Length: 345
Image (cartoon, rainbow, N blue to C red; front, top):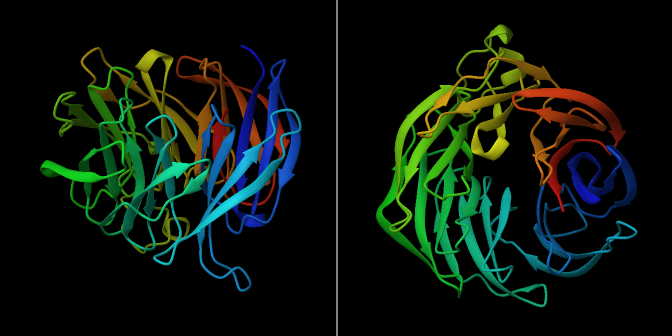
């Protein structure tokens, strides 16, 4: 694997750390501050641009999305432009149409929007939608469709997406998740015929069949993605998972050619690999790895050989070698307070 970069958002100190992964180790290159409460970002590697969601602060006014230029040699991020968000901060951002369309989902604001991009500058919002507690958005690889995950309404809203960033609801307009499960993050497999959602309250990996022509999702099966040894029970909106020892699902990523779906759970601070069968069916992990405290975000390297995990109650990230459904710890590297979002570049 050629040398790659790893970016980590540190919400607790409003910064993004840039690491180089070389010779099987993480080397911190730079820390870019001034990104208030930064907890989500997306990278356009073709243009070396980063779009980071930031929160409001006493002297910063509104929350927004900041466009930054990435210097691959130094790791520094230089602010270029900003789009204010009167409706509330973004919880998840994603790119479509070769980096010319940005999509965002706001948990606190309960809304999603799309913007056209020109030279890193976001247009006025093109499309707007409302669902309670939106937690993720993901376009299909071909850019024809987009999916917004509503934790509060237990559904995935499904849309056709135009090159001009317009959204049109599909028929049906939503795909249901189990009541009270709290769907959180979503991924699509490489073929585009399956989607997987991790739920926050039940800690389950949901498997949806996806029609590649119409874009619609249909729930097929599900499997637990949390360690039963932790003894955590089903959670609910507004609960304190740590105080009550409740399930607290967070992030998910496909690996191993689509044969495993790595999932993080924050109460037990674990990572586990849900097995995926030839038909897309899911089954619970056979083993779990205790990782950084409260692992909200993690990512796998492009070749699938490495995994980097961050913890909301930690100031370090952990680097692992990946072997099927096993993780071999390699290194802990200092990053910053409240690390919660990881992306390879």
